[in-house]
Amino acid sequence: MTGHDVEAAARREAWRASWAVGLAVAAYGVSFGALAVASGLDVWQACVLSAVMFSGGSQFALIGVLAAGGTASGPAAIAGATLLGLRNGLYAVRVSPIVGPGFAKRLLAGHLTIDESTAVATAQPTLASQRIGFWATGTIIWVGWNLMTLVGALLGDLLGDVSAFGLDAAAAAAFLGLVWPRLRALQPVVVAVGAAVVTAAVIPVLPPGLPVLVAALVGVLVGVPDLLGRRDAEPHLAHHDDVPPAPDSGESER
Image 1: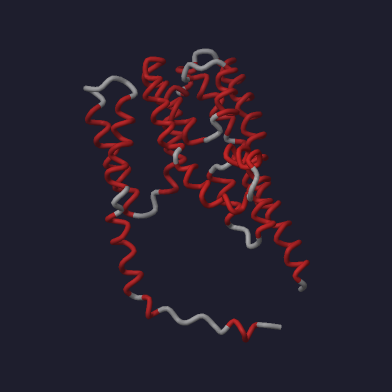
Image 2: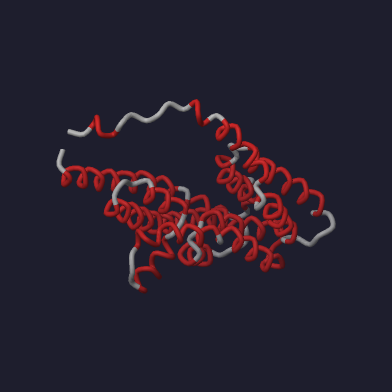
């Protein structure tokens, strides 16, 4: 197989991954639209939030706090969503070489830098396929997410009193669904449990919206040192001699 064939195959795979991930994530936007209306936002407010913020975890965190404390918890909701959105700044460091130079292009790329666009882009083997993965995934999700937000907001608005359907508690459940797949090691489990216990303890004494900021502080204090994460990694490092050496790459050359 020639280099041109390999590059073409990589580009096709990037497009397939972009569509597969993009459509699946975009469909989830209908949940956000309905939950945003259930939290007290208007249809147009839900749509503007998706278009401008465009960060699923931060959006669900925002409406989750609003649902619990109403408009009075707005500052706390914004602060919590901002803390979650900071991770996208870390993604920017990784995708910057993929995007390349150009102020306007980087400005647009900053808006499309999310979990999924970063994951699809960095999983590709060549620079050209990485760029396809980033731009295609980000664009597909942005367009689809905003369309589905509108659909969900209209449906939620038609339902009227959403408390009868349990949607007033669904924002927290949806956000838990985003976090749950990440709880695969001891360190994130300890962070999650510690934040949950402290939050439950301060809810009776703090105004609505502030407990989520306390939870974020606990997450930072427990998560940044990553002591348990290092401990989990030590056994793997200690037994690196047991790993058989990789075969000589020269033997597979054609």
